[in-house]
Length: 279
Image 1 (cartoon, rainbow, N blue to C red):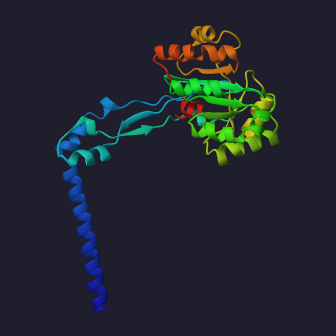
Image 2: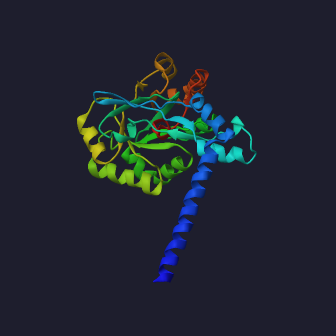
Image 3: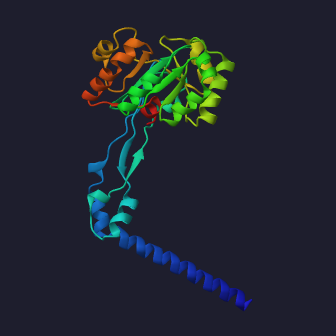
């Protein structure tokens, strides 16, 4: 019995010592001038997130904010024992309202200072010219593919994703069927390793919305839909966060370099759809 009490006493002493040492370390750290300096400038470097904006059945994607990671910044600066703003470490602050939580809304644009180009691939379209131009300008885009094209170009689909582009789903002749959308999404996510899947519409269509929602696909309704005169249409309507859809034809191929250069001149990045919506 005596040995038991001695063991309990010894263990209690160890625990008390550990707790006391931990408290002392925390007190010393909290009074560290370096830590105080980091905390003093914390608010200067804070960027608040922008929530996704919902208006009836449409949604505009938000943007993450950022703030100083005090613990990691302190650890890095403590190695040189002096404050250096170049060693600040940041962490993301996600919006409270995120576009990624809504499969039942039409996504029309984003709040980012960037835009996305969507290329609609129909049955017999050839995309090599588009890819060459995008590669020349180091631009990543989104290719929406018709089911018939998809069936005959599975390897091309995987290649597009590996190149950093996003692949969307047009169904068959813009008609979504449960079985068609399901197998196309499976190839994109399981084989291509794309994180999300996307449907497409140019009008309010509850049937498409419900099918895509049931298949966990976000539905995109671009705010700029190019029918003719691509460059003129984009110049007249471009704004930050725009989602721009283009058919693959000679006009698009001819004017694409000018479109890219114009968007860049507006200080807007051109990124794929997945990046535009990933807050």
